Image (tube, rainbow, N blue to C red):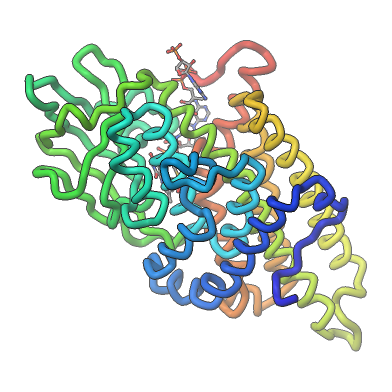
Amino acid sequence: PDLFQAPDYYNLDDLLTEEHKLVRDSARAWVKREVSPIIEDYAQRAEFPKQIIKGLGEIGGFGPYIPEEYGGAGLDQISYGLIMQEIERGDSGVRSTSSVQSSLVMYPIWKFGTEEQRQKYLPKLATGEFMGCFGLTEPDHGSNPSGMTTNYKDMGNHYLLNGAKMWISNAPFADIAVVWAKNEEGRIHGLIVERGMEGFTTPETHNKWSLRASATGELIFDNVKVPKENLMPGKSGLGAPMQCLDSARYGIAWGAIGAAMDCYDTALRYAKERIQFGKPIASFQLQQKKLAEMITEITKAQLLTWRLGVLRNEGKATTAQISMAKRNNVDMAIHIAREARQMLGGMGITGEYSIMRHSMNLESVITYEGTHDIHLLITGADITGIPAFK
Ligand code: TGC
Ligand code: FAD
């Protein structure tokens, strides 16, 4: 009864299993109890609320689809998506922490790591005892990660890592970093770098207007000696980090629906209560148009994303299908946030309501994990067979 209102205009709940609903509802209740009451304050102060880490682990926010033998929850892709939806209903920055830990740190260790690496890191990452970050982007290589210059040399008994990563979520407090770097032949590999290794620093990035409750930073490698057993041998080349991004972008597609739902729900309730010209503003056609379009777009995104989840469960979802959903849903959410904010008039710009925070957060979400335009070009390349990036 005291859960969030969850628009389900096409009875999509009928497509979910009992387990899906259970997982979703417990994430929803936890977000309502632990995240929503505090998040505005943390966002205003530009601080990540570290006290929620343990709870995030308990609701399956860290590696929901990682097998139970490694501490994961062993859930399917729809459950993973629903957890991301509920977390981002609370805040995109909290969902970022969850996405990074799950799909960008646990996923590569599970898929490309050695059995020793899996045993050493995954159970602790699943509970939040260890926190991780993912270093792909560099100051001079964002949309074009294959141009990266971070590199390592084989020194016989260890690797020597040099370079810098930028815009890294969780970097300021992460215990480990999954870092993508080139070897002497220019081939990209993933290395696990641990906090405390000499020459490794993680300066925080300040002055963000977006994703303020998420800690962002740089990763600087100045002749860092990385033990050889910290290289993930299972896959090399740009395809390795890209495969991680497939998983994270899929989760973001669901997450954006959560942010949109919260904006829609807030605007709908406000419009029914706010009286102007002697009537609730919900009785004016212009306001109804906004609300009707919001629920239409949310419903379309839900259908697209549910189907994508089924394809991922079957191992059939393509990178281009994931790009379409990430791009569509984040764009949908950012438009809904803008319209919803207008519906609240002056109140919409305050922290009394979540909408402005969602709106600002989504400016990061539409940029990271591949920008809006890069995802369009991925679709373009897929349907024409002609990549237009270069
Ligand atoms: P391209 O020539 O297309 O591909 C190079 C090699 O990679 C392979 N590959 C994939 N393999 C598996 N899965 C995928 N999804 C793959 N995509 C590509 C490809 O087959 C090829 O292999 P090979 O063996 O032939 O060499 O690469 P390109 O250099 O032209 O770049 C393509 C482009 C632009 C689409 C791609 O690089 C891209 O998506 N750029 C956007 C970068 C991005 O998304 N960065 C995200 C950083 S992480 C982040 O933002 C985290 S925020 C997290 C949070 O807080 O929630
Ligand atoms: P650029 O690549 O410089 O792009 C600038 C503009 O040019 C964009 O509009 C882009 O669409 C456009 N553009 C670029 N190339 C083309 C082209 N070929 N054709 C047409 N237009 C083009 N990265 C990580 O590795 N790990 C993280 O944890 C992480 N977290 C992040 C958290 C936040 C808050 C933010 C803002 C970013 C994060 N990122 C992370 C980095 C993110 O993935 C990059 O910002 C993103 O990939 C874009 O790169 P860029 O900022 O260098 O922009």
